[in-house]
Every structure is written in structure tokens, then in C-alpha cells.
Length: 285
Ligand code: SF4
Ligand code: SF4
Image (cartoon, rainbow, N blue to C red; front, side, top):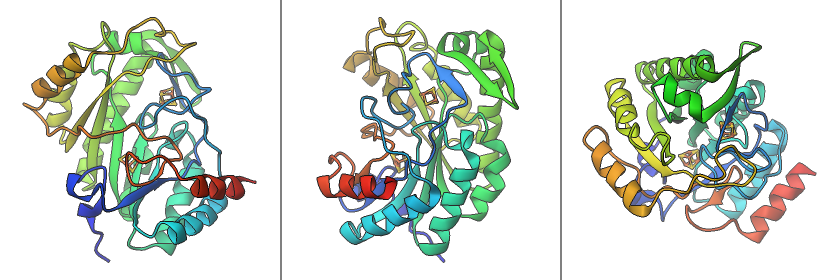
């Protein structure tokens, strides 16, 4: 089986109007708390906050995917991106990936994660030919990370402050290195938070490039109510452009990310069709 990697609409600009992607919202729990995240909404790893998703079991997700493939046969990628973290729900995530791979051998598989619990699954991800993994890395300095993450729950233990950031960053960087050793395309998302990490993203870029990351997505932080960061303004367009320019010294940039929801489906940038939302609701019922 040869996967047509170039058909991935998020990674290849030439494919984005031709091929669609579908996110299967099977991962509700999260293992960390980012200070910009309001868990009433979707995860900001890859999603626009403000719309909660239905949660599906792996079997329901397969039923939904079957329906979606009938309505939208140009879907080339199945992604798992929350609404929590895929590896805070490892059984559901791995089961869904196995089921999709068995039924749709040509499908590209893609996962977006905070990276905390990714490491133990990398070998199986590579076996399943998961071709693209995204890790959101907002800091490589634990001091800065301690301002971004309220807590991290790892191996059944709670970490806070700098200890939390240390555990998370250590695991993220190790997982990135292993992904590349396993031959998986690795994207890094860095969320630009003014006054917190805006001058640090360049250091993140330098480090992740050194570890073999393939592409960097510098995303503007999205201000949401009821979060620690609710009074921090979103970065200006100029700030984002400057950071993208500076970090492009180290890595190619993804600039067309539209912060898809955990249940996004279809061509990137188009809103989910009523029909598809209906199918999702039916699958979850
Ligand atoms: Fe929210 Fe995602 Fe951060 Fe978890 S990893 S707290 S879901 S933004
Ligand atoms: Fe993968 Fe992100 Fe694209 Fe979804 S939006 S298919 S997780 S790169």
C-alpha cells in the first residue's frame, strides 16, 4: 500500500481545495490545563474554540466516517484532534486508528496532541502508517512554560508550576525526536501569546528544527472568557507575520491553518455542512 502523502490538504497547499479531511471527535479528556483553554470549548491544539463537539465512541466514529465518505468521497485524511487530547484517551484513539486503517487502507491518518503521553504509542502509530503528527509546543523553557500551563497530570501524578512545564516539555521534545526516528511527518504548533512567549517562539523553532520537525505553525492565541489569560489581547497580524518571518529561518511555515474544530469535516476553510452535522448527531445518538 502506498499512501498518497501529497494529498494531505493541511500539509500541501496544492491539495487543500481538492481533498478534504474529517476529524473524529473521540477524545474528550485532557491530561494538562493550558491557561488559554476553556474546557467548555474545543481544544485549541487544532480547533477553533466556541463550538463543542459531539463525542463518539470508536464504533460510532466508524459509522460516521462511512456516512461521510458517501457524502464527501474526496476525504483523504482522518484526523484525531480532541476535543481533549488523543493520548489522554489512548484506548479510544488507538482503537479508532486501527479500525480506520483496516477499513480504509489508503486513508491518510493524522493526529494532533500536546505530546505529554505520546511517546508509548509512537511505534504503533508508525506501524499503522499514521503519516502526520502535530505536537503543540508553546515553550521549551520551563520558566516560560510555567506561565502557560496550570497543571499536568502524568503517570497518575499531578504536577504544577515549573515541575509541570518540565515534565511536559521533556516529553514533547523526546516524542518529537522519536517520531522522526520512526519516519513520521511532524508538525509543531506554537501558539503566540503576547507578553508570555512571543519573544520565545524563535527559540522553540530553533530547538524543534534541531530535533527534525518538518513544519512549524505559529498560531495566534485565541482569547476566550473564563481563562487565566482572558485579559491578554490576541497578537496583532503584524506580530504573527514577524514571528513567522523570523522562525522561517529554521523551518518551513504553515500559514493557511484555519484552526479546525475537533469535528471539522470537508474542505479546509468551509464550514461543516448541515447534512454532515446531522450525520454526526445521528452517529452520537
Ligand atoms: Fe485545552 Fe488542548 Fe490545552 Fe488540553 S491541550 S488544556 S484541550 S488547549
Ligand atoms: Fe491533521 Fe490538523 Fe489537518 Fe486535522 S486540521 S487533518 S489534525 S493537520
